[in-house]
View 1 (cartoon, rainbow, N blue to C red):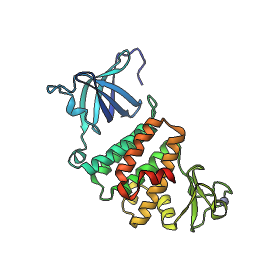
View 2 (cartoon, protein in one colour):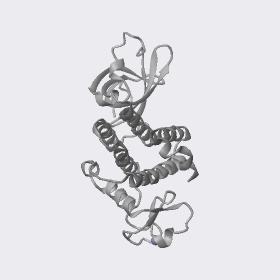
View 3 (cartoon, helix red, strand yellow):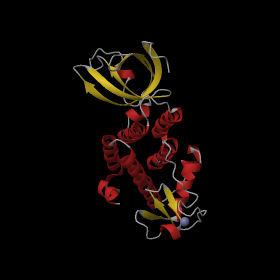
View 4 (cartoon, protein in one colour):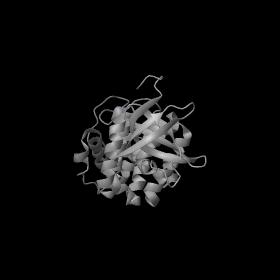
Length: 270
Ligand SMILES: [Zn+2]
């Protein structure tokens, strides 16, 4: 990061979201490699003559020149590096990009560098452009976000008795941050039984590269179980440790993405 005295700085960024501001301006939330999350003002961007607008669409990877302002820093130049064009032609892919954007918005801190999270965001957008199994891709991204944000779920040892977990039905406790063995988990409030297939899938997603995970062949039931477990865990973390507004927005995206098969109510009730 440049010293505060510098009036102008340069950064790469991915636009996470934007909202209209004033007559012709837009307020952008972007994620950057070295400055974490930033809120920046793009002046005049809603005018038809704006030369910046095409370079500042949601989920465009862009090179910015930014002038420090009194309240908000102002984007003075923007140049697209990677437009992720496949997203723009496909609403289903785009809605997954919004979900990843929300995850990064929730877990990425303002003005706090998390370079691996930035790299994950870039890769995730690339995967979303190409994936033939978007739900599986999302589960991989969720697991990596949890790792990078310091909430890596414990999937190898029982969180209560430390016993190595056996390949049987174990239990998942969102409140405790991972798995419990049958002796410690059975009958415990908030601990859910996890099928062996889902248990193996979770471990695989946590320890393997994306290229391996993308080839996983999971049944619909197993994929739905993994989605439910990771979803419960994310909701638990966000509800207890994060800003409620962003948490609620994330919930809405979750419900939107999962459709009828996994309703908002079932997640809140569980
Ligand atoms: Zn135990």
